[in-house]
Length: 326
Image (cartoon, rainbow, N blue to C red; front, top):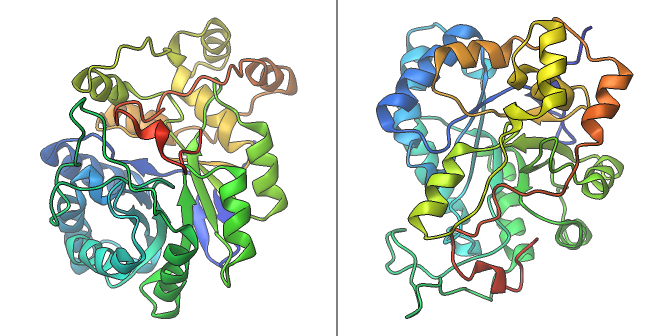
């Protein structure tokens, strides 16, 4: 039943295969959730400047570390280059130093380019995006992945980041980076679940020794809220209501979420399910005491339908960007 609970990265560091996602949570919820997660034994915390919670998380980390309840070396903290407005090589070190200040840390374990596309901001303070008369975002077509990556490499050389990686990149974009880099991307963070399995991308990353982290491994209710605010009408799937998932969950006396997460980690992919609910956080962590059989794995594999929950449609017009990856 055992599954390796760490992924060994090409950078030489280890990343816990299970982490806590913190996207779309209010400040007080974030503080409570991170405290609860650390108490439960979570050591991998994923955040980003656009989640607007780095200061809240930093306060919790500071209290745990300064009180001696945990050592900094036991934690694996991921954050990202601000997206989609911060993809500028001149901002890389500046924005990471701001994240480190907010997180009250001396270094980050994993720093990611959050998106391969860039928009123009309405001001210089990282605020709202500039928009056209029809409400679509003003895209910045000058996005330079190679220039940004060289600055990311500099973060490693300066000891500000242990590992660097990318998020939401496609094979073509990753291949371009790899041809022009000194440090290979250690991790690719992507949406991954039974309805979006992306086998070609997964196989490419395995051949390139790039670890995968799955965001929205259980779908994402938060996307519906973003879509609604952006005036986008979509029917999003409920992964917990899939008949075969419910059948397998009943067999093992587990929740649907536990089945979906176990299926992913058994593939050697890390997961960062977001939750602020104590019961669900416990459930998400309690996935290492059972194992799906090959027939069940194949049943779940066959659910792939190329359904993307986080399609970034809440950024109206973003699909016109030359580096839009989907």
